[in-house]
Length: 360
Ligand SMILES: Cc1cc2nc3c(=O)[nH]c(=O)nc-3n(C[C@H](O)[C@H](O)[C@H](O)COP(=O)(O)O)c2cc1C
Image (cartoon, rainbow, N blue to C red; front, side, top):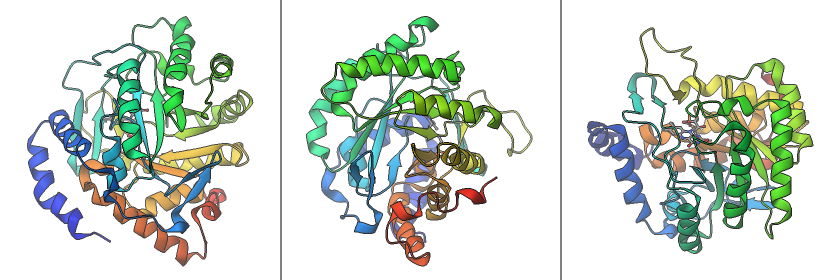
């Protein structure tokens, strides 16, 4: 199911981009995408539409966090055919992130390793950018992923999230609280039931003062032990969160050929199995009541469909965009339509969770 344009990317554009260091290639691509007119993609067929949190998404495929950290190319993501884009991670104050190099390609595995450490223009700049560009890209749903500054003391992390929510909620269809980046020291310790409840209370307080209250989701790491998931899921559900994003990058190197790898989060196909497994577990534990965004190693329609059948209402990708280019979006959407048809579903919503008991 490879299209001509996908080949153009892989034969011509990718070799040029891969001659550059990964971050320069990334910046160049973002600048080009930012200049695209939003109305380039054809309308999605109705069977790909799905309603989540009472909002209609024209298709379930979204851009994962980390690609467009400062919301520079929202119209471009709509032009490529994404149903939604999750921008960020955005921090309250601007910060440079980790020193370079901090992003590596693993071409053999079609994977990436990164330890970006939340480089961010800060919430003021991102809010202003969103206010300016949002009207040009009205057809795409927008998630905003938020995280604390690196130098915020642990007891003040909830305040960072409160300020981010208050500033960015007016422009977001949903907010994602990132608790799972391996590159901000101490952040992943927030993935415990007690701390989740503390955060939930802080965010509910912050939301009380807002005119617009988008659902708030929690983004989780694939490295969490299965035994913890039941308590975690209960805390997320009890604390007013609207869903979960599973999964972030992994610190594990299982599945890679022996060798030495840089420190950081691994993404792409090595994450695929764990992402499916975690989505299925979270879907079962939450009784299908919390919406799940599935992410990790999606590179084909079959991968996206497997996450949907495991229990994801929406699916995201990052690494496949680097290896397959923008045509991956069109290819995955058309393949998803065919898979729905094959299995006799009339819409994506009917397929969500239909295979959740098949995963261990
Ligand atoms: C270079 C890079 C930067 C990322 N930055 C973020 C980030 O800022 N916030 C976040 O929540 N996830 C971030 N991620 C994780 C992705 O959103 C996604 O969860 C992960 O890469 C798995 O999806 P994939 O296999 O399709 O890439 C980043 C991933 C990569 C490769």
